[in-house]
Image 1: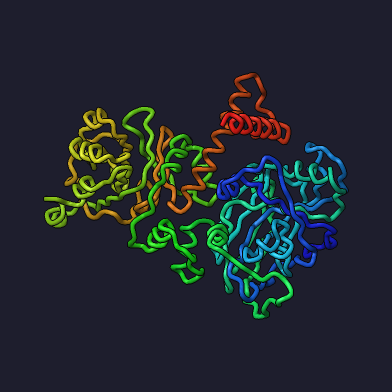
Image 2 (image 1 turned 90 degrees about the vertical axis):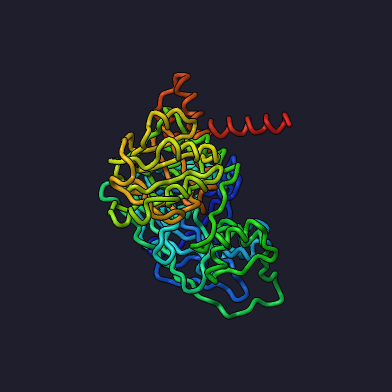
Length: 517
């Protein structure tokens, strides 16, 4: 192996293990499942991976790999982590074009030469607990995956214990522990980098970046085996969603669907800067309405979105919530000549409030200037009558008491009696803006509660909503245990024992619900 230990006798990979990935796939397993990868698929950092001729769906999966130290046979989940000697980075490449041929075994679609890059360095497992690890993946320098081991459905020790029930895990064996959301297709010329680190451990040790460059193969498949084949379902699953596939088609990186759907065409249109944003579905709206902003914020942080909080705004009614798609309005600093030309008549401010659609949140860029009103009672009432889901401004609200009597939730920096001409000129609508330090694009999903307001990029709204809803259910169960007298030690966050209890409870509830149908 590339970092000074022998080639492993076994490479075992987990199918689904991160809630973010399970949400993306639309299924959450009750127990882990596995497949083998051959040692001949191993590759060092700095190498290449060939996309075979006649294929189109080569996908990366950045993962945390654990390396067995002391052999393990029939160990407990509590003891499993003690048998891990090292932690490193891995990339579990797969070829969707051959998935149907393998029927779940993944022999051909994930077993090719170079399909398991690993390294470049290994970190002693002793530097952090099994919950202390982070994995990140970049494609062409852009961060596309980020998650941490404290979110795993099946912690490392549990994986070791489960596998050790069936086989002896020997020194040097490698377990690939699953990939988070964000896995997608790469094409020749793309560079994929994976890094695993322990950010809270002394010195924040890191594996360094595991670098792989995608190349194009030219050797055709013979007639003596199953040939590659793809369909629309495989294309959408490989790219991550219809919207991401449509964007890839628009960028010339993917083949169009054989039978494009209306939603795929809409997603393709939304990939263009001037296009209308994708709609917020009823299902996603319902999930986000039941999730706390704090929970949604955690799901966004895992995906690398740290600056999506609209700072300094609060609701005009205690307990208000907002969920909707963004319609934007931008003010520029006051200047007498510009205000004279653009401030009167049916200006940008009035146009925005007069055209907001049902379910939209009107988001106003006021540059954090609270020294004047950016919305008053008449315009707030107009937005309410039109069915807007809310108003968010990083400026002030005029006629604050009157606006507070309306049903529409308004998040702002507070009251101010002055009109626009003191500090602002209404300038433009339906453009990308900066509100409270956060970038907001038309069609982004806006969520708000007593903790504040967040911006969710439309392309990841569904997966963020699903993960947040699942986390809310888990947190509610933990709260029930605490209310019943349980200590938070080992429960929050859940250790392997508590995780097993939670999964058993969830499985029983699901079975009962199914039986009641």
